[in-house]
Image (tube, rainbow, N blue to C red; front, side, top):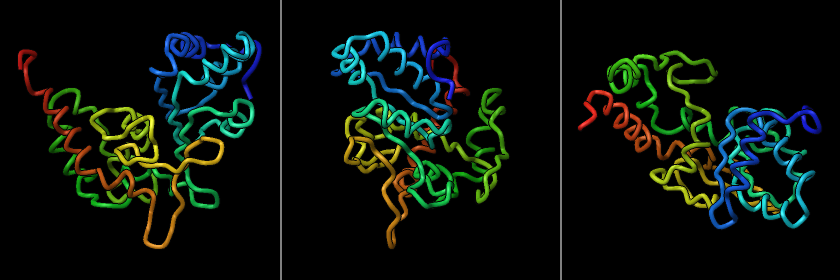
Length: 225
């Protein structure tokens, strides 16, 4: 685990700076769709360098949405820094890795807006930027082997247009809906008869894909428009 003395990075130092500038009333929203090592290092450094009171304020000055615990640090963060506002979007224990709530970006629900035809018509046809959008992704199963965007809910959750209230992850929105655990962390809801938690994201697919297409359509307009 690359956390501790000698492991500060530009990213961990920037996180310290931004969290220090935030407050418990106006916390920094942190989307983690890759590894959490830089974030873990920022926590470690803050604990080493701050008084207990200042560190407690520091820990109340951010909210985290973490996709799938990529660096396998969630358990360590949870035990070393209790009481964080932390959403861990990841499969329920014992489930297949493709059962994480964030997979609702491309699994379950109406998949018509994840097809190659939809991407070609609404995204790739909008100009040079849209033309860079890939038409092939790999994850099995993927109904169209095209659009995936599996990490996007970590950004959707903090997007006002997406409907989530970042202070209340138990409420619905484009980034999903989560269950609060006893220590304050938030996790995917468990599967149940007739219920697939991935639908907490896929139920909004029509809306967020329309929003995507609208934003890309701006590429066809000049700056004055």
